[in-house]
Amino acid sequence: MTVRVICTGFWRPCSVDFELIRRGHERSLVLIPGWSFCSDIFSPLNLSYNYILPKRPVYRDISTELHDFLLGRDIAKVSILGWSLGAWVALDFQAGYPDMIEAVYVISLPGAFDREEILSQLKALEADRCAAVKRFYRRCFLGQYTDYLWFSSSLEESSIRQWDMHELRKGLMYLKLKGKTADLSGYAGTRMRIFHGEKDVIAPLDKVPEPPPGVAIDVIPGAGHLPFLSSEFERRFCVH
Image (spheres, rainbow, N blue to C red):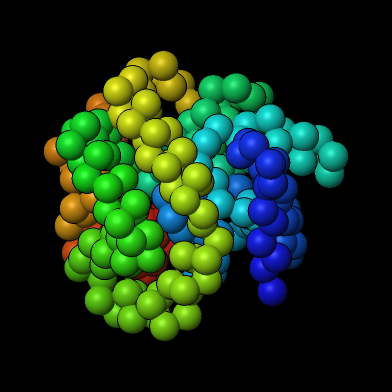
């Protein structure tokens, strides 16, 4: 059961803690979810790693908390997989602690959002938070109907409960900032792989920031904004 912690008084970011799930592997993979989603979105994944998952919503740079968590468990190096907003969070960690990174997996990286898009989403949240988030979920799963049925029946309501309005707003502001400064050229030389869904309408392919030299975008056919739920993603992920 997930326990929701509410920060009281003047709103401030709550510290993010993590959970290490030992799955019988030598290597560990940090999994960072996207805006309005929680770590359980990764539950269908079966990759050859132990998993490190944030215990609460991620909507900002959490590099310091992740660094401290890894040091506290004597984990010297990890790979990190960030999806959507989480892809920028993963890149923040790589930029801050490059010596702790084995590989970065960038999934559905959003580029620049129009100011009108951000304002429209904020207005929708103010009008009806639950309805706005549910509409966003449906758009995320375009092209992935079976995955949407699974999510809507098992994870949707708990995901909505775990994200409060402040976190949703702050997440949009984080995305707006990252979109403005989207530049991956500084990650040249990083062991990086980029995956993207062919039918993604949240982060369309033509808006994805230019990859660093030597890194290609691996497009998953037929997938929307959640290509990691595709068996084709797992097959390609395992090919190095």
